[in-house]
Length: 163
Image (cartoon, rainbow, N blue to C red; front, side):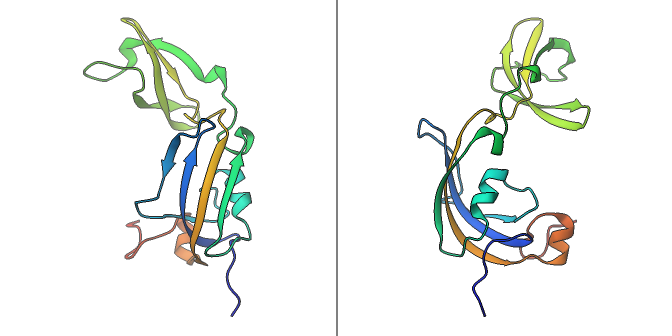
């Protein structure tokens, strides 16, 4: 039997570390459970998925993903000032807090970037928009995704996912 390689509809587990261009760790699975995903289901940023295509268990890759293939460029139109009283939140609203907001295409996360007595400025850009993403990835396992996983769009652990 030939060794599986990463391709569409494969359930894959990886360990990864994501750093920014300053070398600061932004996110990592190391020291925790590996990240499971189904290749080709848009569970990862497009640039990383392209780099993982065809890789095998045990492969280690280091790659940089430009904003266009990551979380996109920053869009200044996604930053706006809203009246303080639209926030249904008891307590102080502080810079860096994240809230769910109703948008045309559903609920999205927004980050508070400025606050005063009357106005809260929010940013709906992904926090990593405009950033080059530097990945260090190790491929741990590859298998065919089950029909249920493909239907749900994500990998199931033991006992399923509870849908």
